[in-house]
Length: 210
Image 1 (cartoon, rainbow, N blue to C red):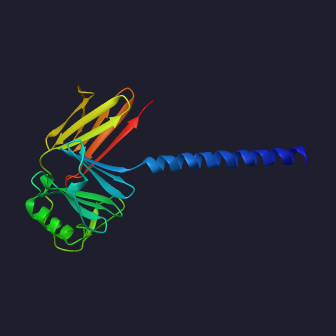
Image 2: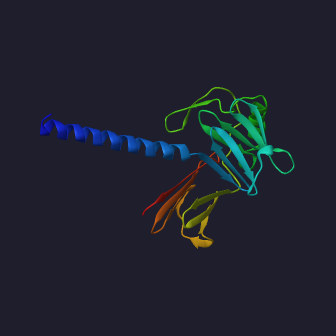
Image 3: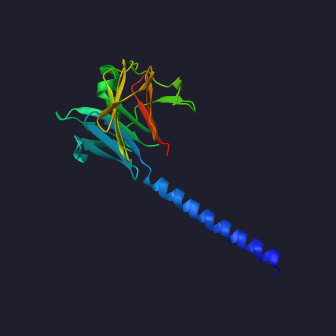
């Protein structure tokens, strides 16, 4: 084997080893990734494809009633349905506090029959392109959304209402920019954002800058 061939072989071996290491690291990251929902008094985490329920900071799996494949509801302290969950192809939820009574009761009826309540077709950006059945309209959201983001050195609590948003980091107030349901927080070592859509669904992110 000449020197050039040996060098090429060693380089290929090194690339293979590095690629395997990178893929392994990505697999570890993906294995740790999970979907989470935070609301006033409750938390839901989808781990291993199934929702884990926390209520007032304590495990409360008994509050979840599964009615069909990847669909169910969570009850409140009075035993009444409070939160509808779908953990199938896409994670979805409806909180009774943020939609009209007519829509919630309709959606609850679908869940109690073991069906996912959203019969609407959406485009790649999530906009409804076709409504397959007649359902009560989802009103503009009301009440408040509370988002908690725990990260090393920071405990963010963001409260969003239709009128605006406030936030604290480790208990101290921080400045929030934005309007109309879309808000951002900028700090020296992180950036965070919360977006509340017209139907009350919450999207959020946290991005370390160091």
